[in-house]
Length: 210
Image (tube, rainbow, N blue to C red):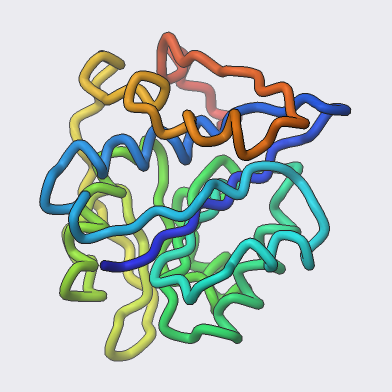
């Protein structure tokens, strides 16, 4: 089995922080497919801002995949951790997604050569296909919403395929109902978790600014 770590560093407010919603949705999605549930082992979520040393200490075994949900408040820590992981475990697949990742990330990849894959927009379908392909390959040609490094040449590749946008959130498994957060209550007795419920997706506006 391949080992997967999710890094989604949310702000901690005293004893309170959020469940890592993106990480939970992606894990629940993968575990809903039996062949992938048997192929991947998910480590505990790394879910709030902390020192780099404390974050790296969570990596108690070699990662095959390290995923980062990157936002304004955690980008620099995410980049530092990803760079360090690639130095320690060069074969680890580093996957970035989130609002800080440009939709066409060629310059971002050039600036950060330790990133292997970038996922733009909605990640469920892309991540599912990404892990399915990674069971036996590092070539992600044709996987929608994905940019990646060519496994042979290291050249930047940008897949133009985009899945049909679907606003029906009921098609995706709920991380709460799937139980992926259940262990966190006993593992983190000092933390008051706050739940995020996503009721809709996608902006109704088409602004030139964005």
